[in-house]
Length: 345
Image (cartoon, rainbow, N blue to C red; front, side, top):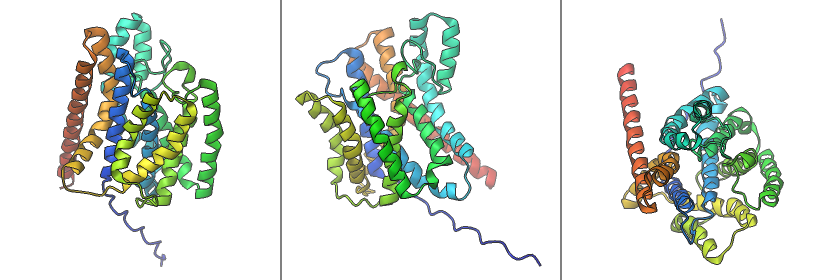
């Protein structure tokens, strides 16, 4: 008689939403929009000149959420290829919409059908091809999605298996590389341009690894008592404050990543309200954050270059495009859920 096999592992308990992290994500997306509006339209003073650091918060939130959501699934056999396909299917459609919005601008700038077809096609697939000094000229912010997918793949293949001390050692190993970036480029704003594209990998991994470590340390119960309201206003306050004081230095960038971002994450985790206006706003901003990030740059550039509208109109158009894409994505998700329920009925 064949002995019984090991009992099946217990089911993974459902994970609740974290409205505080949704709100942080939305605030970060709005700060990035402010950064690009100021840059493209030459607005002065530039209150959000350092809002490129909001992308580092995105990476840290991704490391935290991916560890929280998927590490138990990796332990149960979810492979790296399956995970990466799921992440790509989650990120690509929204980014593709932004890339298609950016296509007319690329056509006007390059006027080279072969370059547009080949380079634009690679960019559309979230693959870099340096043109006009940019890694992703079709949709500039796509550089961060590319490196986030690399971090996701490394997470699924290797990082989830590492113990806490090894994870901390990797974080420590990233710090000298970040210092080198600061000394080399006088900023940590690397990744978008051809000449600083590859150095964005250690920038991505530092924040992502810190996010992973914070999940393993806190498990949604941060040991730092940061008031949630302070966490929510900290990001724009820091950006505006450094602009008013004339502070711009890679050391400040690094301090923002390793000190301010974990503190903001701790404050966001401490926000647990489920009823009222703020939780609803948090959910809406969280849902809007990625679509807005995906489409705002080509919309703003198109409004400035092709249509000539001012910064306020461009900002409203970018926000409207992000909202429309959010609603469309939610409609597609609801349709898929109904289809799955019918298929299993």
